[in-house]
Amino acid sequence: MSDIDIAVDPLEVNNQKSNNVRWSPTGADGDADPLGLRDTVVHLDSLTRWNLTLLPLATDTDDDNPTVAENEKRSPFPWRNDLNNKIVLWKGDITELSVHAIVHSTNEKMTDRSYITEKLFAKAGPKLQADIKNNIRVCKTGEAKISEGFDLLCRYVIHTVGPRYNVKYVTAAEGALYSSYRNVLQLVRENSVRSLGLCCVHSQKRGYPPGEGAHIAVRTVRRFLERYGSDVDVIIFVCDDETYSVYETVLPLYFPRNPQEQRESLSRLPEDIGNEMGEPVIPERQIRISDKPTFNPAGPQKEDEFEKTVDLNEEFGKSINGSVGQHPFASMQEHPDDQKQRNPRTVNEVKHIEQQKRYERLLKRARTEDLTEISALRCLYRTGQDRFGRPVIVFVGKNFPAHTVDMEKALLYMIRLMDPIVDRDYVVVYFHTQTSNENLPPMNYLKNVYHTLDHKYKKNLKSFYIVHPTWWSKFATWFFTTFTASDIKQKVHSLKGVQFLYAKINPDQLDIPPFVLDHDIQENGPRYFVPFEEGTVEDL
Image (cartoon, rainbow, N blue to C red; front, side, top):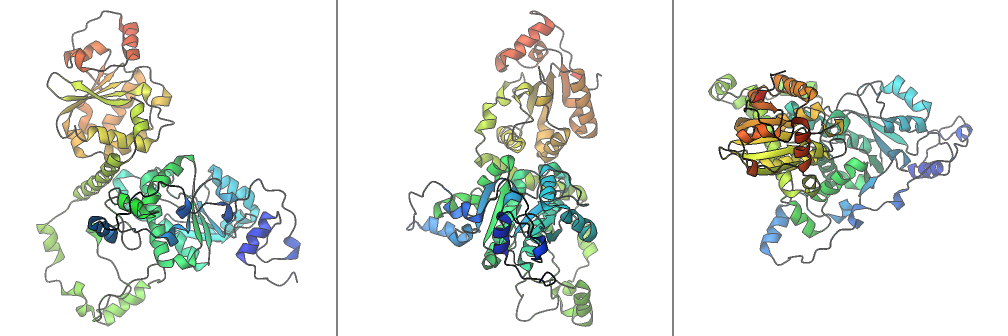
C-alpha cells in the first residue's frame, strides 16, 4: 500500500492538515505522523464573502432615472453578486489559511528573508526549501512558479516576484506587476486550484505604492473571474495592517456590492482601467503580436490570453511562407523612418507623458479620498502671501510622523493642497525646528515625490526657505539638490532664524507654530536683527 500513489481530494487534504496530521502528497501511511498542535487554522466557512460585507444600503435605486441607467450600462465593472461571492478581504497570516494554494511573494533568487517568508519555510518544513533549491532555483520578475505545500495547510505554494518600483520606469513596473498576478492566476487554472490566498505582490519593500499596486491586483482578478469564474470558488486578498485599508477602498471600484456603489465608483476609477484582461494600456504601444498574424476574412478572433500559448517561431514561419503581403502591417505605404522624422518623439518626451499621466491619476485620487487624518497633523498648510503677492506654503517638520504616517496619503494631501497654487509663482517655508529622525522621510521617498510631481511645481517655485537648519539638514539638502533636484538648487535658502523671513514675508502673513517662535528666541535671543542675506545650500 505504501508503494502506491493515492489520489487525494484537496478538501480532504485541508481537513487532514487541520486535524494535526502531517499530510503527504502521496498519502503514504508512513508519512502520517503527528505534527503537533497548530496555533491557528482559518477555514473558508469562517470568512465573510465580499457580497456579505457590511456597507451602507442604497436608499434609492433610481431605476426610472435615465441618467443612472445610462451610467450603469457603460460601467466597465458592473455589479455582479456571483463574482462578489468569490472574493474575501481578510487581514491575517496567510500560512494559517486552509485553502488549496497560497501565494508567496519573494525575490529573484528565492532567498527573501521577510517575516512571512521565514514563517512559511518554518511551517512547510525542509522539503520546501529543498524543492526550491533543486527544482525551481530562480524566479524572474513577473514570473510565477508552483511547488507543493508540504507541511503547510495548503496543497500548493505559488511563488512570484514583483517588480522594483522606479518612478522613471512606471510603465515597466506596471507591466511586470500585472504579469505576476496574471501568471499566478494562470497556474491556478492549470492546477485546478479552487481556493487561493493571494498576498500583496507589490511590496513597499520594493518601493511599490500600495494604492497603485492594489488597483492592478484587484482589476486583474476581476477580469480573470469574469472569464473563468466557474473554475474558482474563492480568492482571498490577504492584507496586513498597512494594506487592509487600501484594499478596502479599492475593492468597491472593481467589485461594487450594489447599484449605488457601482454608480459612485465611476467617478473614482483611475483613467487607465486596463484592457479586457486587466493589463495596463499604453497608447504608444498598441501594436500587438497576435496568435495568428495572417489575414482573416471573417474578422479578428477573440484571443484567450489565459489559455493559449503562442509559438512565435512557428507562427512567424507561417506568416513568411503564407501571406505576408496580405497582412495589414505589410500594406503600409509610408516608410516608418520617414514618419518618425516628421513626428519625432524623444525618450524625454515619452517619460514626460508617462509622468503626466501618473500625476493626473494621483490628482484624481487626491480629490476623492478622505485625507482628514493628514490634514489634522498640521504639518503642511497654506498661509498668507509674500511681499510680491505670491502664495506661501508652510511645512512643519516636527509635525510630520514619517515612520507611522501613510506616506501615499501624505503625497495625495500635498497634491490636493498645492495643485491649485502651483500654476503660478509660489513660495515654500520649511521649519526644520526641533525635528528628529522620526520626522525625516527616506531619501528614496523624496526622490519619488520629486519625480512624480508635475513640472509646474519646479518651474513656478520661486523660493524654498529652510528655517533653523542643522549641519546634517544642510548636507542632506545639498546632496539632494545636487544629484536629484539640480533645477531648484538656486531656489533653496537656509535661514538661521525667523526674523530672516520678515524681509520677504510680512509677519502678519505667516502662521508660525508657537514652539518655533519659542525655539527661535532661545537660539537667537528675544531681540535680534541681522541684515537679510539669503544663505543658499552651497554655504556649507
